[in-house]
Amino acid sequence: MNTILTLNNLNKTYEGGFEALKDINLEIRRGEIFALLGPNGAGKTTLINSVCGLVMPTSGQILFDGKDIVADYRYARERIGLVPQELCTDSFESPWHTLHFSRGLFGKQRDGAYVEQVLRNLSLWDKRNNMIRTLSGGMKRRVMIGKALAHEPKLLFLDEPTAGVDVELRKGMWEQVRALQRTGVTIILTTHYIDEAEQMADRIGIINNGELILVDRKEDLIAKLGRKEMTLDLQEPLAEVPASLKGFELSLSEDRRRLSYSFDSAAEDNGIARLLSGLHKAGYECRDIHTKQSSLEEIFISLVKKK
Ligand SMILES: Nc1ncnc2c1ncn2[C@@H]1O[C@H](COP(=O)(O)OP(=O)(O)OP(=O)(O)O)[C@@H](O)[C@H]1O
Ligand SMILES: [Mg+2]
Image (cartoon, rainbow, N blue to C red; front, top):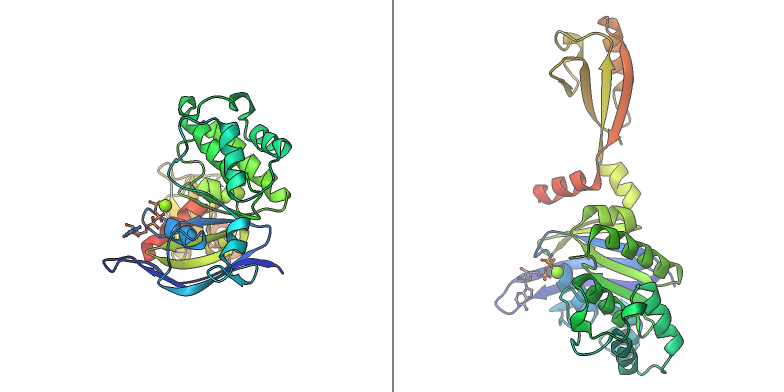
């Protein structure tokens, strides 16, 4: 089966009437990295916690491997790992013991070699015997990841895995997450860092005000919703935009040597040929041409604003 997780019409209304999730439908494919992107309070943690059994949905159904996670809760729990948003570790324990303990809680056989591998992959081997309270914030976060991996889950949730982690380490963590994917683990992560989603995810879901606005493959999202901008470096400064080009969305730089044209990259006729020939007819030639695709960040902001 290619779907590992299915959410059907999932709703969560918190006590007091706040609707944190509104009719969420989502399928997660086995082996993918899925990024859930959304502003503060969008409902990301509520969604994750619903799957992990920490939040009771108001209505709807969640299937893991096709089995209802309420009816078959043991089956789901054994195979799901969660790195929660908040740091919560036992300050007076060591990474080594924490991981073994966590593995034991899930009823798994003790496996020193496995725990060693996890700690090494997270660059925590040197710190394995240190008290967790003596580790740095980024190290503590990696201990949490180790804890979530201790029982060898098939689906791993990372709720803002790199909050508070420095740029260099973040890149290292992305690499570790990809390595985890190669071992067959499906990963769902939430993030505010759009570059993180852009770097890591196979598919992206955008959530805002409890609604899943859209789910798409990263490349398709960028191709579909993105606008492109073409910049023309002109041989001669342009006194003003020729009347024949008034129909185009153009802007002229201050020195009048650069003309920028913004267009819909998915449109059948993007207007480039007409623009270039119009410019030529008006007696201007280009020295150079660049195009730029709008980033996921620009797309995200325009989507969230629209709603
Ligand atoms: N236990 C609760 N009782 C009442 N409201 C809650 C509870 N937990 C969360 N909420 C509300 O539900 C909404 C969604 O919260 P949630 O934690 O899911 O957002 P999030 O997308 O994870 O945000 P962030 O990016 O800040 O972590 C927020 O408005 C929050 O205040
Ligand atoms: Mg959250």
